[in-house]
Length: 247
Ligand code: ADP
Ligand code: MG
Image (tube, rainbow, N blue to C red):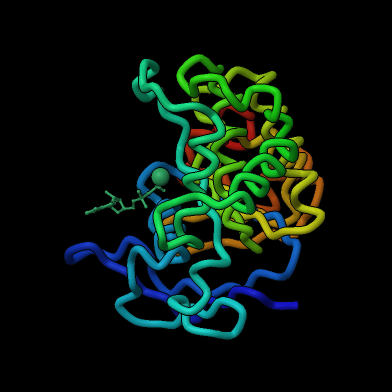
């Protein structure tokens, strides 16, 4: 079933287009990896899906409705940042922030707490619930932010470079959790981690102002070049050079 549909979306910040003529649809339980060069428009695309930005022209529908009606169905996980490690907030309080959208009274109910605890169990961080967020590793912290997104009971989760600056063990743990979540929810993830996205994504979308879609689960590095229509002499995205896809 189609749950997100973009038709001929154009967006510009000032005079130049960050995204031009972007059309694609997303099905239930898809796992989409957004890749592409820096400045290619990946974060802009997520912000349009979150309703933070509005297209200059074109249309975005989520569950067949205008984006404003469906905003509660989307969870968001920000880029991993090494924010102030002394910030004295516990893991469970970070996850409870995910209930704020659903709870306009500013006070958490027992139900909110129960949902936050369940979210922590799903990302295997329940035993860390009383720890200060700043004492966790980058990978553990990202799992807590995934739990915060889950606490709002979304149908779709958007993640912007969630594993940037995380060690490879932590990255794998994050991707394994996303794989499990993907059995019941749609995932759209921006990443520079080409090898992980090839392993975990069902669809890869290459974003460089316009988009190129590749519905090729389990792409191998060797055929990625063909799938992405990268020809020799064509400018190679920096992150693909490392994988020998093009020069
Ligand atoms: P990516 O996430 O793929 O690196 P972005 O979506 O952040 O790319 O940026 C796409 C283009 O839009 C870039 O040229 C960037 O400089 C520009 N851009 C991003 N955010 C803003 C902004 N707030 N104001 C003006 N230009 C922006
Ligand atoms: Mg970005």
